[in-house]
Length: 131
Image (tube, rainbow, N blue to C red; front, side, top):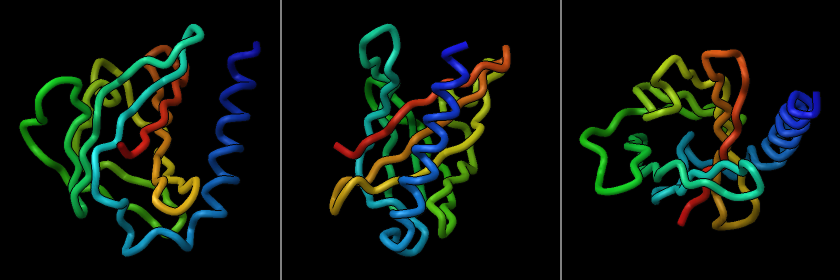
């Protein structure tokens, strides 16, 4: 039962980090850039692809090349992101997004965490940091 405890701890860390970062988000948008998404699994970080943010649009995630289309996203004052289109493997094969929370670890270090719900009910967390 250690896995559910890690999810709860991760969620609490996300909430506490987000509460300190609220005032830093400008105009409900993430800073433009390419965000590398990774998950820590079996003792190593696995690359899940890059998500490109430009204005209020996102594309990806992609591992090679570029995404064929960009979609809108919205971010509220608390840094919670709503993706208004598909998000690769996060939203395919029965997977869905449970929560996406933007954080700022410091000036110029934007990131967001994606909590994905799998078809079997399990949750997976990944972190996307700007390159």
